[in-house]
Length: 88
Image (cartoon, rainbow, N blue to C red):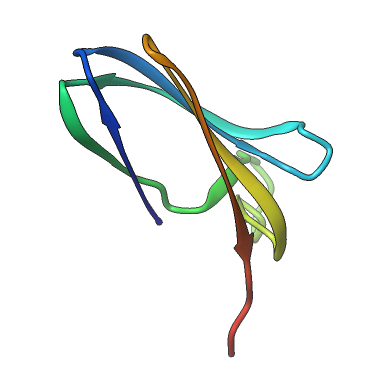
C-alpha cells in the first residue's frame, strides 16, 4: 500500500497505523525530503520468529476493518481514515 504525502521541509517523519481504538498497530520512521514522499507498506503489522518446525504464522497482515494512517512531520500531524477490505 503506497503512503504518499507532502512536507515543506526535509527532516524525519513517523508513519503510524492506528486501529479504531487509536492503538498503534504498526509504525516506522522515515527520512523525508521537501516535496512529495512515499513509503510502500507491505501491510504486515507484526512478524514472529519461531524455532518450531512447520511454524506457519511468521507474518501477521492487516485485517479487514477501519483504520487511520497518521504521519507526524516537523510541520505537524497529518491523519486520514481508510478501510481495509478483503475482495475475493
